[in-house]
Image (cartoon, rainbow, N blue to C red; front, side, top):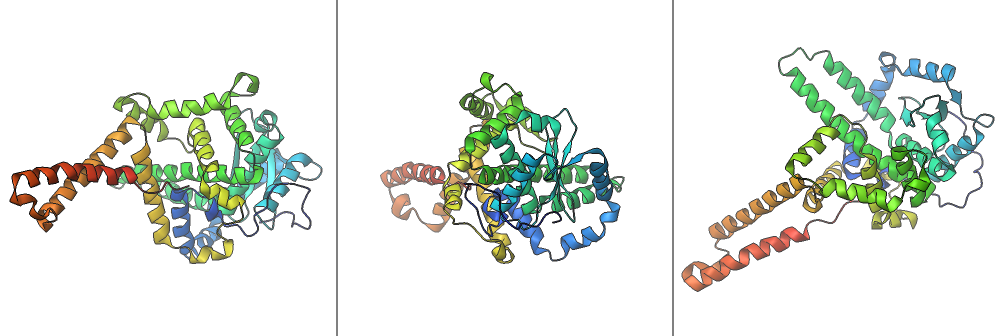
Length: 374
């Protein structure tokens, strides 16, 4: 990354994470994709070489000419936050950061060769110091994970694919690609929210920031607990029709809904994974090359399976019930063909006993499930 090289750290009383790997805070679905991409040696290098085909250079010039670059003499309080975030997450160089005039609160991290962080004036005016610190940490988390590189690469591939959409069934294929990309983007935002919490180390500030992004600068009119209750109501209310509408509302979005982000971050903040990181137990960056793609995908699959199992959404509950019923039927068939029922077939009473016990056993296994992932 370009920018100022750290020579000394600004004053702070927050915990630092030397050598931390982004795998420590990445959402399982985000992590599995990134581990796989990192294993493709030279993948990002090739596309960096093709950066002339992308609008990155144009964007850099645009921000340089039309925005305010954060530094020691311009927005110095943001510059200190940026340096602080890079110090806590152990980035050796500070990426460039710009403030852009925009009435909509927003922030982003873009770029192939050198990540650029951009925050809008509306966001700067909306958030207090600790809330803004979490946002800066969020964007630095994107930079550490390499989201800026891989997002740009995949968007390039998507745009390239659009040019061949005239091929039969091309639109179907493109829709599938875009849908998958957006699902990953949404999970990468959850990862970056976690990075923001590691930097700010104030879960209430993170909650307030998300609440303000949703409802504006009226903190005295809002309540964090009530805001989180909205996420609970959103998940479990309605019937199957509402479940379908939720999916349709989500598909075009690159970010999860704000209440959902707040609920997910609170759950992670209360998890053992977060506490282990705060205690200094986390994967190191120099171990990334040894990370297992298979294990990462297994953890991602376990996360989705657990999400279905524990979800209160009507459609997800139906899926879980069907899956549980299928597992129960499979267990019955297995017992029938392997003779696991023993002498069950020999007497009517024994048969009835075996039949009665099988569903209870299957339900108990289903209820145990897998350990929730991060």
